Image (cartoon, rainbow, N blue to C red; front, side, top):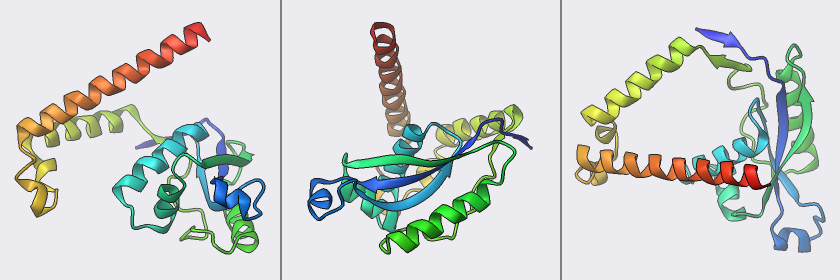
Length: 181
């Protein structure tokens, strides 16, 4: 069960700002992808970067990898909560494709979660499912055959602990920066 999201939807472009792109005449960078998010845009950009590492063969992800740190996310429009974000995203994708023929969007827009967020009950069920998958090794079973032997329950637990420590360290750094900034 989902509950309606009370946040506006941001329609954004990802823009290649590599030095060679700027030198080629794109003084403000070259847009290559249009998307939407109800999260903070920089968080969505980090999500794109993480997915690019998981699926590097996709066109958009290839471009993100090529850009490295030289990529900018620019909000093109903020769609109010009660408004039709699907139509607005389609408009911006059409404009992107017309203005920049190398755009990497696969769909015409409007695909994805419709500005809703999972209920607490759904999130709790997912958390239990994830913990169970880690505990019984079923996540390891979904890895490719070449990696399966390396993904024992012990290595999964160790990687998970390492990931959690890194996450807490980043949170502490952000808190310190916020307190001193």
